[in-house]
Image 1 (cartoon, rainbow, N blue to C red):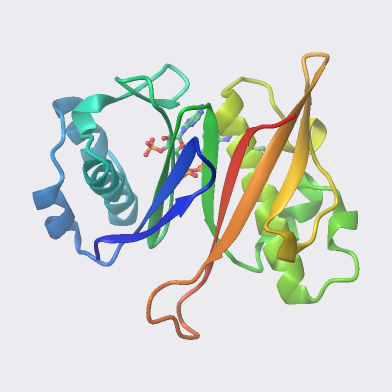
Image 2: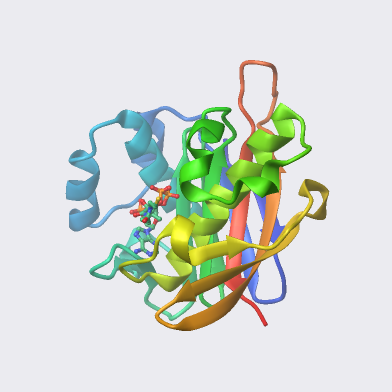
Amino acid sequence: MPLFKTIHINNDTTVFLWEITEDFNELFRQASLKDTSLARMENMKSESHQKGFLSVRMLLQHCGYTDFDLFYDEFGKPHLNDGTHISISHSFDFSAIALSRKNIGIDIEQIKEKVLRIAPRFMEMWHLENLSPEDQTKKATVIWGTKEAIFKVKNEVGISFSDHIFEKDFLLSDKICKAELHFNNQIENFDICFEEIIPNGSNTEKQNYMLICARHGK
Ligand SMILES: CC(C)(COP(=O)(O)OP(=O)(O)OC[C@H]1O[C@@H](n2cnc3c(N)ncnc32)[C@H](O)[C@@H]1OP(=O)(O)O)[C@@H](O)C(=O)NCCC(=O)NCCS
């Protein structure tokens, strides 16, 4: 499958999504990799992770970059040589990159009921009151992704999802929300947008995904 979807978040930021339907060899043939990336990929334990990694290179190539333009800092945050901000996420059958003029964080998560079991450990449970079980799962996934995406923007050691990141009340139908990071005696505001991703030819066996994007807000 080539590019699955392009989402224009605003004038600064575009998200590109890949649905991974190719087998490993097909992706490997098409993605050009520098030696360090090849070594990293070879060390990955699962083929699913390798395919996620390669599909990100396909997204880069779609956007006019290659693996040779991408480097990682000591915390694992990706950067592009030309200074364009990039954020990367992959989950099972999807991968996503966000390209932006501003610092950006994205997360893509498969929507799974399992998130409700760990929800009390990472979020304020009042967010889930008066919702159907299905909407509780989706909202908890948005909140988890919000925290991951803010973490990717900040890239700072010591941020706790439950103690430092707080989401304002929002509805799933809003597709946006606001969040605050309380860290190092500062409060920073973030604008979040999210969108449910429905795989092609979706049937009961294919899970949907949630894409979450975070950027600094006012
Ligand atoms: C880094 C982290 C956010 C990655 O998220 P994930 O859901 O495991 O995986 P994703 O596929 O969404 O994202 C992986 C990508 O994030 C990017 N990434 C890794 N570290 C990063 C960092 N410090 N800052 C920004 N982006 C980072 C990388 O591009 C990576 O993909 P790649 O190495 O293949 O290019 C997460 O693993 C993490 O370390 N979180 C720590 C925060 C925390 O405290 N979590 C538990 C709290 S209860």
